[in-house]
Image (cartoon, rainbow, N blue to C red):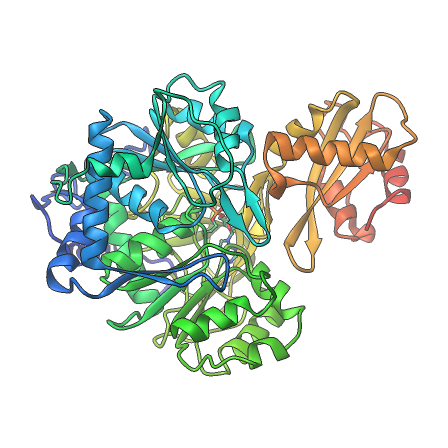
Length: 622
Ligand code: WT7
């Protein structure tokens, strides 16, 4: 049978069964409505009603009130860890929910979070879900301008932040960044400030409130809002190949079902396990596998405020030993950067508690895989290489721990209920094993994004028009003779830097804001630690001799517009870019130059000025 002979009836049966694991206020009759044609209005479990906090918090607070829900490991190793039981979590979430209500926030309002990784962020997000407000978490490494853009696009009415966040040796003055952003955000009526770092900051009377003040008048028992299956749960912004970052919209029931199911299945998670996913809540991984997945399964999740290299490169291993972590889920970039510090570091710690390791966010190279397997898992732990996206809401293709075989750098098989196919550039399905195809998904799955916030047309255009009738992921993949998938990377103008996703156009727009810049082109190039580095080719109005200063100014501009995580690694000043006669930049050629594959530049005869390529190669930066 072909790898992609999917049986929709069986798939729906599977999801029906999974839905039985939850408490519903009302059950569903229709499992799935809608498909990937026309206006792509997908509905899962349409008639069902519930609240995700009933399933992630309340039911465990009843059955296992004393069990630890959250372990909080702070930035500084000397700060005592905090353990929050399900009962305590429940009280905290209820109190926070009542705080929102007291401020007049209601179902359907958007609450934006710009915080460090502390329990208050997790509690704040769950409390938003409890009252039916839509959470929109913005990673604390984005700039004021990026934050403002996301607030403006979402129409958020409330912003929750910290005075500051610890990041290794540094304190990031989050409240100051919020104040800067809020100069242009008239929709925000209230700012809730959780004091954490105690750094100096301003408070605007009437708008800004201290969380500890608000909590004085809060209710430890606050009823949840009854949510319809397709009521929005959260928005999460991510970059695409064109335009501004898009707010992917996820809804209640389907997201809940797949988050819980994929967590349990992929990680083979058992009752007393301790799960540590290192992702910040600013990313989808932090939503699904730091927060909802473990809590929906009544598990214990560890949240970590710090960075892998503070106070030194042993921190991860020390935390695993200290908390007897059983499941450790992180990104290849982190693995490669810790590998570079030497094999001795993990060997200093007792990590026998570990049972399963996971990798996410970017392709993992075989060397990093082997190092992770031997030095962290001591050769005993399966590594699940989990492929998914902000859009998919949960893991789509992955090894299942202790069930299916791990193959270095292969995500291997789709989860039950998930229907990947590979198509060629004309959209024809490739049925056999292939070395390269465009990865699409054939049928809807419960946790898929339902729309782009405020722009459903863009949702349809971006994901469902490239290959008619299916969802296009933007990734390329190979499928071997055993039908195992290996993700090869993006085939569009999206780059993946340390597991963070950027559109090349978005970085170019930021660079072009520098007054000396005429035009720029950005590509990703292979980077030993980050997976991809950012290479910018820049044309300026006139030659400046202080190129180092100019480079710094350009990096500062990107930091200001997007955030420090999008700063170019390499900047090359050029007099022209390889353009076609119709004025399109041929990025393919720049990518080859970045990859040092000068022998396979391909056809350059359609270029307006073919010699540009030689001049660029002469000044190459890597
Ligand atoms: C893109 C999605 C998945 C949540 C975190 C990132 C790449 C993700 C893998 C993997 C190879 C991977 C893809 C995808 N990616 N996981 N296991 N192997 N590539 O979510 O920011 O939405 O990025 O990350 O290119 O399209 P995201």
